[in-house]
Image (cartoon, rainbow, N blue to C red; front, side, top):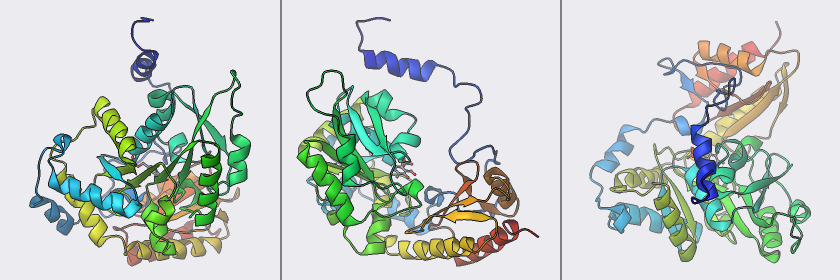
Length: 385
Ligand SMILES: Cc1ncc(COP(=O)(O)O)c(C=O)c1O
């Protein structure tokens, strides 16, 4: 090792140059299964709300958007989007980013030092689907707590806090909360529970991050504003490419100082943008047109979840608070990979997230007819004949 360059660089270099270990090349949600690429035309894609294809009207919104160099603060459309986002989340400032993963990772790197620890839930996105980013990019480790449907309580935070002043222990630097909790079945954290967690962190002098990739789903379902949910958090991620239907874009919001540091980190990893108003216009379109309609997605998810509850070969169905349905198949039934493959042959994409666990997500591009037909096929497959 060349000790003249920082350790982090060696780790990152090792990470990207080491061959992927044999047998590990599966993509999240394709447990044991392969899928055609692209999906057969006409497939109703319930795999993720990140899969919607932007409709023509959304694309047209980008054509005439005023543009400039975002790195110099000269892109009026991005500025408009960020002012609106900061206002929505009740923060001083915001930063435009390609994806929510980058927003989460930058938040962690800004709010922690190498060797620190983040308290988060075991099923959270930062732990499971960000390719080990917190370890690689920020040099931190996760202190995972086992919550209920992705949510944990203030007493769990208190118990996970590292005592201060002990030279052996990592220092707790951050608590991260996911609203809605993706792998908890799109579960909505009750506002008071979030506040209690934030308060415990504040008392301990620890920063807080809200991964609100699907925050607007919670807002539409409960009527509680995004600002109320974001109150007290040092950093908030919001994503425009989930239920809101944009093909690109997330934002990170926080204090002016936090955003300046985040800006610098984004630059460091080559995430600086140029005429990003072209994409920003798509996100603004999403905020103008696709927030209220999230209620339709929620209704369809509820329909699917109640239908599944009545099926013989279904073991458990998580409460479908928003647009995500997660259920497990009973040991007498087929495996998740078999169900995914069979459903695909019948024209439906869904995801296997474990041996017997399946995730179904409703969004802009799957309508009522798709939902009714999906239920019909699941009924055929998950009933013993
Ligand atoms: C809770 C949560 N956070 C972050 C992300 C990352 O989003 P992106 O695909 O924009 O990186 C996702 C993606 O599904 C998510 O579910």
